[in-house]
Length: 328
Length: 165
Image (cartoon, rainbow over all chains, first blue to last red; front, side, top):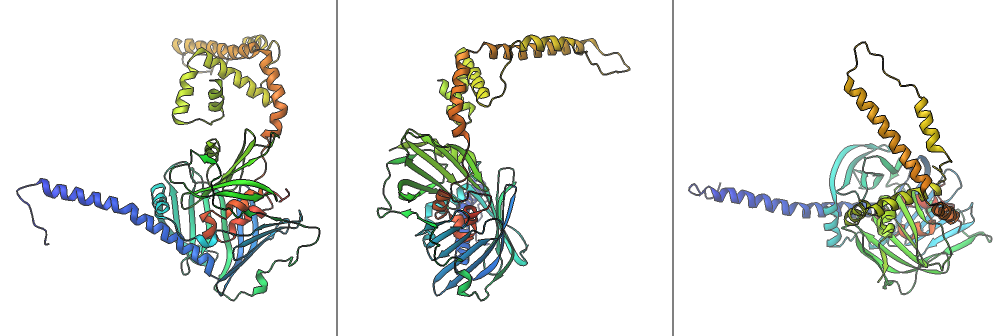
């Protein structure tokens, strides 16, 4: 022990202890912020770089749906195919940035030409701080999921404005094999889980090709996506986003084919909320609340504009945000 | 001011705004707005429409109800009986006054509410989650980045919207 004792002044050791405790407290959130961010980065990298194929079960509300998922990472290129095995045979094909959704029942292909994927993992220091400030991030149990050894992790919200999240990651590769969203009563409202998965095996390029290599002539192709002037001010502000949500995107994008829609995205580092504002003239439009699993949507008409807010947050949060949209 | 009370009923207020609306409710005008908006709400939902003579019939039937007392071997102390009587009188008063106030509410309010119902019923029916918006959103959510294409299941889910425009 090299610390010099101060037997004549009992205040000093006490003060030192307090200061030390304070320093520890101050250091802890920062450490946890890095932990959470580092963990997210690892999971994102695994999702992008691993080769895997498996059966995934999607549960939301009373629905349970099974799909087949194939993911290939080959010479820096990423390909992914998701086919639902129940109901209409819809599928999602990702090739690098582009995502195509095929709806054979409606004869529609929706195309998202450019995606955000490569921008991750790079949470800004503010986002890292927000993560630590608004969630308790902790390690949970080890156990088997889809036949493999996993480590579970929990993001527990510190307020009622966001949901809780639990993730089960393959202990070897870090790939997520199960993800669950829970509400404030810790009840599951949405879950994605592999029931069987093979990680790191050989994936054939054929396995990630769309069923419809060429769109049938009577199908509609709906290309959405950002315009040239991508990152620009839309003239709209949102005053009541929950603390910790930072604006990550603002611009106009094309939706429904032609219309220009203002799109703002806020994220707390784990989930995001999108705000869409579009002119609709005076025509009445369906409004109100709807939800699917972990996604809540609130649509309202504001003068001649339609405001659509959606995200992986509770209903009250999207509603609160929707009611705070205003002209700058 | 009535608008704040309406928003309070819809659960749109919180914090200071909710406090202000609650203070407003303490005034007579506030209570009138509260009752009026509830009558409108009931009319929109097509429930709670009072029928003529409801209060009188209710009072008559309550009168005719036999008083049920639990058979107990020991004598029931006097005081609880008094309280029970007081409580039933109070209940009748409350129910009666609500019924009467509903009957008293201006017929124009109900008529207007019915009128609004035609417009509102179209608006009140929420759409399924629109896939265009869902897809546009999905790109930016960090959860999509860590789960790969899995969350796109929301957009192609059989339980969700079918992707028609």
